[in-house]
Image (cartoon, rainbow, N blue to C red):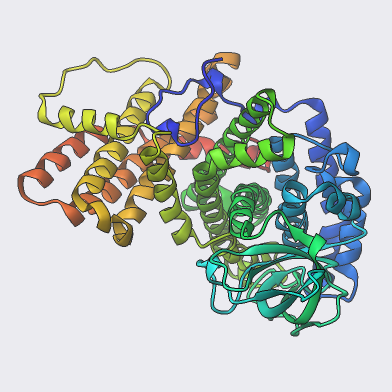
Length: 592
């Protein structure tokens, strides 16, 4: 294997399929974990979805306790603290397979992710010993209290205050938190507040039974109705000084790092939801008859099934590629002498941009899959008796959770540019090279041969497009770039689509290398169709960005380069989608 890739480096590096992990490589033990999670959903969650949505008293906590008995609440918790201690990508796999659990998957994700991980990665030995085993077993449930009425995306502007007592033994919390998942039954709260006039937040571990804590009634929501979501008020709540998490004013950093984990974990969860929803779509399309035959025989329906599958396969490819990159980074840091918890945070932080990419792409994949599932079901899809009605409602929150997709798009560009300015990622050198290439006469090249050779050539053009547009935007807009949100969103889309395109290309190239083209024919069709569509999307987003800051000869030169970089060879998208859909219809399930 070549030198491990750095976060964001995919834009300027030629990655080979030998360097990535694919879902075809899961070990027997990992597959057993996935099956255990599937069985739990089938036995404990699916039969009780109505009861969960009605928020039957005590039901969700009891389900979390059952999950704890199986060990799935402690996937990321070290064995010595009562957990399973699996690697990062295996924790993503468990999250995926629990992701079809609707409101339960939200409670699970909040408890095991933002609820448990701040303590696990930033807590001292005494704090971990006191609380972690209880969280891993499900005896205690956790919640994360960051958002306030006046602070959403701008988390560090929170107004909750912490004041040290005269004798220095405790802090008094005053303030209000909202949209707190698991708020109605959590035993341990990670609360973010500012001490005195501090600039940055500090984190505290607060036991929910503490005097002075009160809750508003459960929020009535569009979807995830079975997820407990409450406002929590802190009125003179005394928190022992030993319950400060990490150091004073380190709370904002904790929040950012935990959100990085939350973003990629959300991507795993929505992948699981997407897979279940496409299975529902396929089953119904095969069962439902109109004009004397099943609707799965009609081209309009087959298009929908194929496109659902393409988007699911692509996001799955990107998710586990990033998961392995994070595992590799963590392992390298541990070898270098770093403690595992610190190495885990640093490894995930290294790939923070990829985490945001997967959050955006995954949530938008599930929204598409759920929307088309309702359309495939027709009138039945709008009925609460169908499984896809719940999927449709529950899906919508994911584009808001863990930072809205708009915020995440802007973060992707911001994080990569910051890394470039620190010298951690050489973006400007390659960008200048592309600028020079625009001034030269393009060389004539022979058409590449091989199943996906043209897609690999197209990928090079996609990366050149990112460098051309982003490099020119930085030079042209300089200090005002951060205010040009439309341009940032365009650039972010270029990056998101290119990362996904490369991920699916590498996965299918690896499959071809190991099993041959004939075995991988449907996966080849998926990659070809995705590249065909992505080239046009990239061309449009890049054109919009260029015309936002360039004009005259400069704009014409860049648009000419753009045509060259996004040129694709013709395929027959209808036939390829027909092949993909036929595989699904014949198997009567998602079989990729």
